[in-house]
Length: 462
Image 1 (cartoon, rainbow, N blue to C red):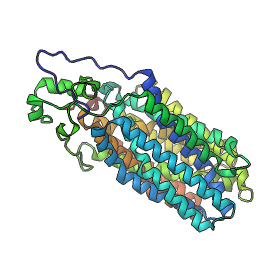
Image 2 (image 1 turned 180 degrees about the horizontal axis):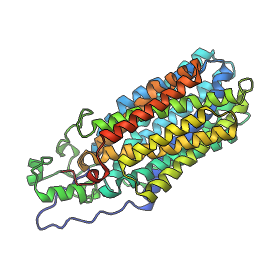
Image 3 (image 1 turned 180 degrees about the vertical axis):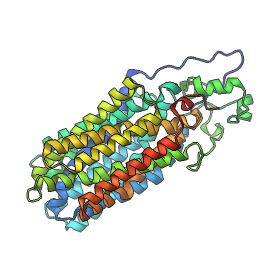
Image 4 (image 1 turned 120 degrees about the vertical axis):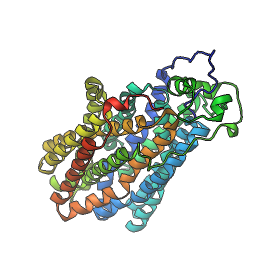
């Protein structure tokens, strides 16, 4: 609903789409960046924390499962709510969930590391605290994605999604880089948890002050109200849907939000979305398994199991190299080569498989970092390709819901993939890395055979 200006008439010109201002874009960027930085900082210290607690690698990875499951369940709900309550409100909910989760996770782990709680109790409380991020933190990414998608022309959607995705990429550079410096004497290994919770508080205050309220307050009228989403709608409706100024919907002629026409539900089984969602699930599981394995792999290959505290630096360095490669893909290769969704998805997973093989056969920090960077470059191409493909597969009016589905698919990959990846790696590294490569191959074949061509995706969806 937030994507239609329903007041258009034959005598009313369709307003030009206003670009998102730099101030608003910076805020959206920071909302995504701070959560990404906090999460990757956590990933860089959790293998060392698990080793300090004496907990097996598999159980550390499994602790994320409940949070990921909640993300899958809640993300579509928050996305639908953002259509009616506004994107800003849902971004705030997401940040509050992140702040609460990081603070409580850090506190529970601090109790465990200092001997106040048994290891198993610490891990359970950590998992419960982490679930706040899955349940409430999942509100922010769909709101940011829908905000950008509804204000971006179709031909520029891949580049716009790549820019938003790059905020995650930049966060994954900042998080591992800062994590070793945030390990203080008073807090120990959990220092990054508290530090990023405080940073998120600052971003939340800025969001509240700087981003205008956007609660929908304008109801459709006339012919658009009678048949607002039908294929036979008049040209004025289609033009308003694809080229109108969404800000009109939020800022003019207040009417009760309850009077807004109903937005039709978008199903996961929708034929337009199904191939893209399968590609997202398979590729997402490959990437999640890789991220689950990496910290433990570095501790093993560099012989740091006996001194887990020394592992935070190398793990952070490797994660940072991967994040820089991701930024290169999203800030450099996609805009420079003008890659469409299908091309980004297909060639991204091919490059990710190559990087995985390089990573798997490495035995020193330099080659490990290079292999992970190549894999991350590939996933950096794949992720915005999949996101833009799902966005372009549906109409502008469905962007809020499709963003929730995308966020849910992304979360689904983290329910079992990290734990299963670590479990397979624990049996033998070749099994774990071969599984990742097979998932990448499956996405490549699916993209080749089933995904819509880039030319057809940029055509108007009626």
